[in-house]
Image 1 (cartoon, protein in one colour):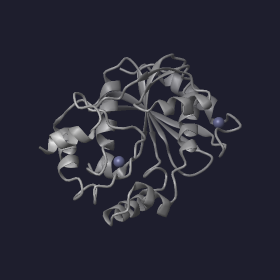
Image 2 (cartoon, rainbow, N blue to C red):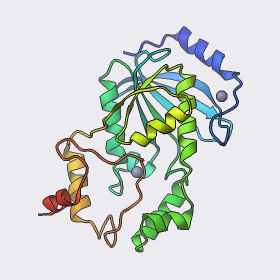
Image 3 (cartoon, rainbow, N blue to C red):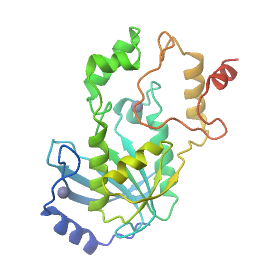
Image 4 (tube, rainbow, N blue to C red):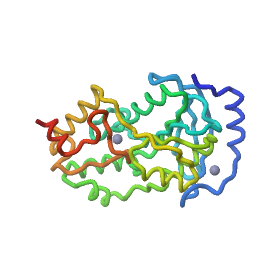
Length: 255
Ligand SMILES: [Zn+2]
Ligand SMILES: [Zn+2]
């Protein structure tokens, strides 16, 4: 169970709501904790923390397990919103598998945080992401589709995430990622990363199907003309016993 008490919640919101800071990153983004509630879920008992920010109307959230205020070595996963993957179960990406694996893993831990960042389609928004999909359907590769629609502003993601972690008074984190670059980015914003934990997806019915489909339908349903599609979460997939889908693994699956 989470150990947030009502008093702690009230105190945290009160303390945070009026804080003044210079803001993080080049956009000087500042976030404020607006509301906290319990969130029992199929992945465990969490608290959910809603944040507002000074840049736009995006409501970022932290999904928290256990005691994290002032804690060290808190397992943390950053997840970027993906409506098509997270909600609809799209096979164009593996965002849902990545999110579920993170929630399940943290749900079983003593404490941990999933930061759910509302930067749909790498910050370009849902409609632009659909446009990018459409361009890819027509044969453009990731880079071309991106050029046609504008690049993702990566810096901002980490700035928001870093501020959220500071607002939650997390002292240091164990970042669940397959991407060591993320660590350097977070550290630039003053987050102490004590360890990297590889984010490995356990093999399950879903991602086996996903990977098989990805392999079998490559060049048809998912990767038209065999070109790479948009990577929405910045991590590569690592699946237990399969690791990343290399060319030889793709071939093995296909065979
Ligand atoms: Zn601030
Ligand atoms: Zn996705």
